[in-house]
Image (cartoon, rainbow, N blue to C red; front, side, top):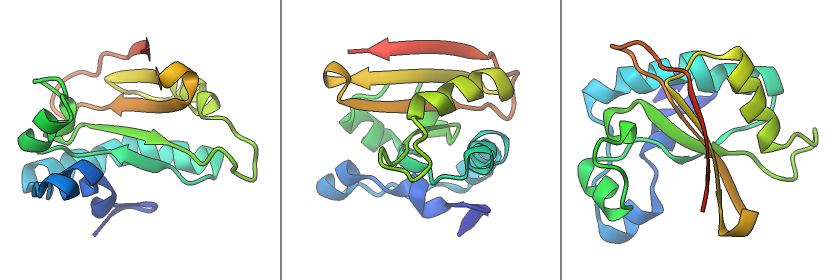
Length: 145
């Protein structure tokens, strides 16, 4: 099911951890509209502006999956309000993931935007969330581990 021009619901359900552990991570109906709004307000505008594919690395997480990945107990992923994503490093336009992050800070409404770096800089991704029912806080963080 397409939830925006360039994003499918399946992208937000996909999880290697869920597959490996036999966890059913199908998005419940209450979260579908929230993911649709996340795409409409945040992810699709990024895709449109930069013209490169965005790879969802963590979308919706059912409670069992969230526990398995040691996610926060109040994770917005479980509500359908958050996604982690990256881009291909070798994209033909030479765009860096950090370029997307900086553009998002200046041009989009969101609840939280986190630049995440792990393993001494070898793994990088962006976490973004968007709330449907409450005011978005425009919180910007960097998380390095």
